[in-house]
Image (tube, rainbow, N blue to C red; front, side, top):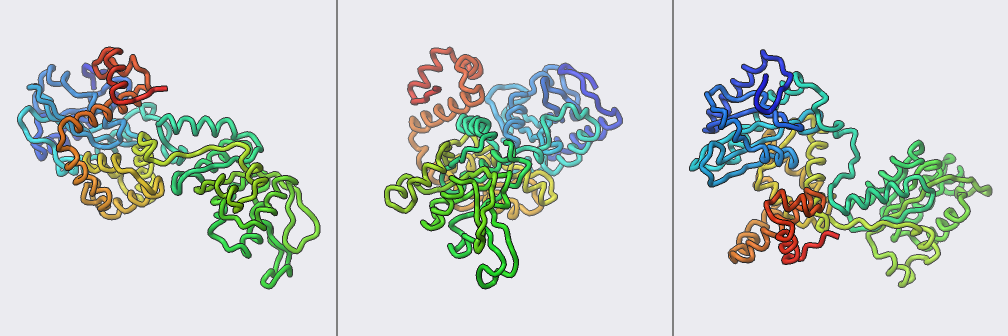
Amino acid sequence: MKNDFGCIEVKMKQIPFLRRILDLIVQESHSEFGAVLLLGRKGYIMAQDSRQHSQSEVRNLRFDVVRQAFEQENPVVWSSECANSHSIVVCLPLFAEGNPIGGIYLARGNGMKMYSNLDIELLASFSLPICHILRKNTDKGRYFGEPRANQSSFVGKSRVFSRLIKFVDRVKDSDIPVFVSGESGTGKELIARLIHKKGRGQTGKFVAINCGAIPDQLLESELFGYLRGAFTGAVRDRPGLIEEANRGTFFLDEIGDLSPPLQAKLLRVLQEKEIRRIGENRTRLIDVRFISATNKNIEDEVVKGHFREDLYYRLKIVSIHIPPLRERREDVLCILNHLVERYCREMGRQRVYFSPKALQLLLNYAWPGNVRELQNEIQKCLLLCGEDNLIKEDHLSSKILGQREKASSSSLDYFCAKAEFEKKFLNEALTRSNYNRTKTAEEIGLSRQGLFKLMKKHGILDD
């Protein structure tokens, strides 16, 4: 099937079926135009509804809206006061092997109503058969990237995220202990697992323990192991977790909760590279990469005498701090989409979408519980939406919905609302272009000097 945008290889017998689906969608949504698109280097129209459409109407397709839906991996609704054939548009992205490959596109003329959640639910309900046709009949080389199942669980696109990935690449092949700090739920264990997975120790085990979750009496035997008869209940020899991580990585979470006696024993392990099981006379050499983490201010713990200074220097030879989500908001969308895809795959259900309003509320929320809170919210939403393929505002937690009232009351001041919009718009545009001023200025229709003035006005730095 050929058109002005290129050519796509698809079995011709499937085109009438796609058109019948589009005719039904257009009719039920009271639209004036409908199409199934595949987004790659160019925009490809795989099929459009059977009404007669002029060439100019086809040329007026808002491919910028399609690309935005592709990037957000969620439906996008757009409107304009311009009197053309695509004044009101909605695009719902389609997925294959966990990756977005195109979208269902609907358009209404000027003066008609905005697309609602009911319209988006309609699109979502038809996404499965249309996706099946795309997956079955399009060239797999047009899929974008590897299936998500093969990608890391640590995702993002912010400059902070890029620095974290560069840090991982620098330390992955070294034996030097790594210290990870950050608030609870920021993903400290994910960083540790990524270092292990990408580094030389990937052939060995990754063993993790939470130092604050196990009583001291048990923690020592868990760490170092024991011989049979060493204490009551020791009915057999058992290697410790450190020994189990030999030639691999041992992750000590919440290291700040480790008791002073165990701190002394851990220090000896780090210094001598050997362990001794409880009740044993001989030592055993180990080859283990140690990564430790805490949400406490470990320097304060050292000053207070709660944490050994010599152990602190042994563990913190190289360190990385993971900022909370509220300081790297650009990563929230990536994490959200990753979690939705992951949980839908685990539950064996079709990909679920967020309504534009629900998505905006999620992106604006501060996430004091960080990634862990985001995980819980997504799981709850998937449960509450039931068989529906659209998560709406009503499915969100009350603390997230509380932003609506807060936002509506604070937006009564027109000038404050305008300034807030300008700052957010600039930050998003700069992020898309990786802080390339020239590219950003061209994209949003400003001169480079005009862009610089706005950045200066809103205190946006790009260094």
